Each structure stands twice: as structure tokens, then as C-alpha cells.
Length: 71
Image 1: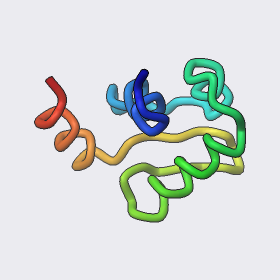
Image 2: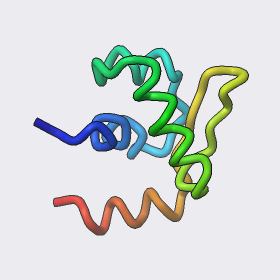
Image 3: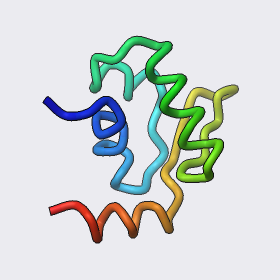
Image 4: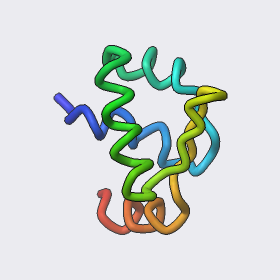
């Protein structure tokens, strides 16, 4: 089974904006788990998280790093 953070990073890896509700549905994580992961990604600037509008987008530099490290 994929790690919880991988369940979020996989759909985000395309570099597009994604709805937080969409990520919740796709990952089957509860809202608390999603919020914790997104808060972490936002805090360390791995992603831009717009909690007010319910959307998130991965940082381009972090996206490049993921591309280099993902088989």
C-alpha cells in the first residue's frame, strides 16, 4: 500500500491545481489526514495550498525533484 503522502503527491505530480475534496476522494484519506499533509506541504513550500478556496498545486521545483526520484 502506498504511503499517505504518496496518495496525495501522485495526483499533484502533474503540476495542475487540484481540489482538496478531489484529493480526499481519490486517496480515501479522511479530512484530518488530508489537512495535516497539505499543511506540511504548504509550511515547507512544497505546494501552494489555498484552504479558503479548497485547492492545492505542487511547487514546480518540488515537482522536478519528484520526477527525478520517481521510477
